[in-house]
Length: 145
Image (cartoon, rainbow, N blue to C red; front, side):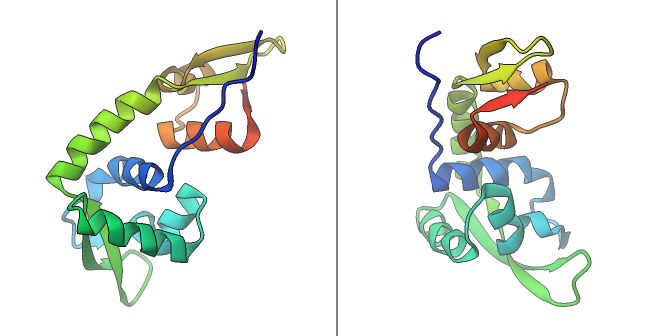
């Protein structure tokens, strides 16, 4: 086997993928923490100020919209984000592109397998999202099952 595959996912791409995964909350009055600054920061491995900064860029180019919403488990309304229709189209293309990245997984016998990121959750017999697969590969290098 040659060099290990290098995974790199930009901050904006992480945010778009995460919001794509949370699209079921689009236009809801009551949402989960996953579309707030702290929830997005945790899911995308970012510092909260970086989420706000990057979201301003995505809002200015009409990829994302910002709303004030009620958040489950919190008494005050918070700023939340969701993809626009154009943002959703961008997210679908990004999902296909990033799904073609190769990641390493280690099987039960300890053998390293190089698989497409889009197939990794199936091979790992898990319900990990593409973003979770890529973030794990980015930080840990090899996924194990």
